[in-house]
Amino acid sequence: MIILFTVAIASVNGFSQGPPSKNAAAKTPEQRAENQTKRLTKELGLTAEQQAKAKAIILKREEEKENLQKATREGHEKTKAEFKAFLTPEQFQKFEKKEEEMKKNREERRKQSPPPPKVAPQSPTPIEK
Image (cartoon, rainbow, N blue to C red; front, top):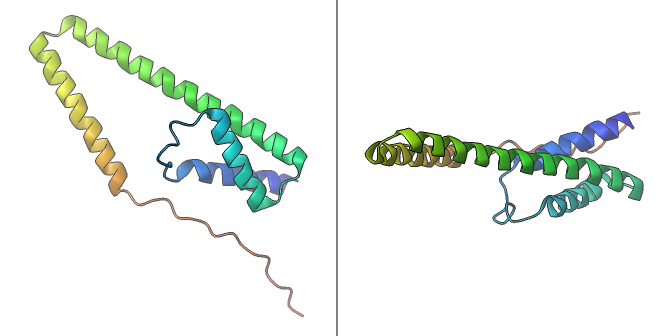
């Protein structure tokens, strides 16, 4: 059972590290949890009970991830407003331009970095006589 749990967690982490699908951001945490649970079920042959447990774990993680992203966006907007309060309009314009350049550079680095290696499922080795 411990091995199954370890494999499940590794698989779930692998799903989150791959490139997101074009409309992954548009999906709700529930939809992402459902899709990941289906993939785990197919790859690991999960029972109904295991599916329910896996989905609950994945859903919790997806909700936490979404909340963190929301908090990060809100924090960024708050910081931006604080800078706008004391910068001159010209300085703030330069500030925004610099932020846009950094965002573009991050996106370019993401595109250029190689995707994580895919781990092929291992079949059991035959027992030698």
